[in-house]
Amino acid sequence: MKLKQIEILIYGGKMKYRVDNDKIFVQLDRGDWIHKSIAEVIEKESLSSGWIKGIGAVEGMELGYFDYPTRTYKNKIFSGEYELINYDGNITISDGKPFIHAHAIFGDENYQVVGGHLYDAQISAVGEFVILPGEIKINRKLDNNLKLTKWELS
Image 1 (cartoon, rainbow, N blue to C red):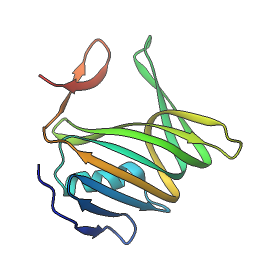
Image 2 (spheres, one colour):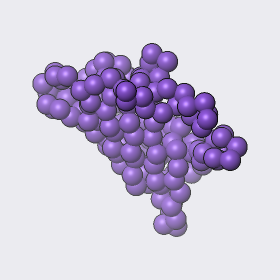
Image 3 (tube, rainbow, N blue to C red):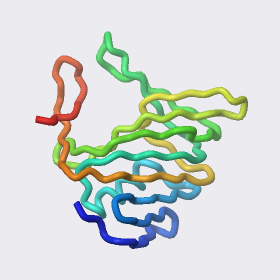
């Protein structure tokens, strides 16, 4: 996939991104939702696979932990402000639509950390992300034993 060379787009005056050869740099500002914003970039750039990395400051994040014995996620919403220490995610296709699967680590004002599967979080100051687009389409398929979707690389 050849991305457009150096293009700047602004959505709603907040989220901005810039394409530079094989990378997409995304800047999120206060009030932007991480996954909603990144999904806009994925759709605009017609991505069907890739990797996402990021850092920043957030509030109101929802994390999940997959409980293997019950094959369910346990979700928890965290209030207050946190540093986004590390965000790692991937882009695949699920049910014909782009899907973001991400894990993240956050730090609080007492330098305590919490992390897990990230459903979404709202930027409280700024977020800086880079998307590394893939060249192939990666679909997710339900694994009936796990009750999870996973990469289908065949």
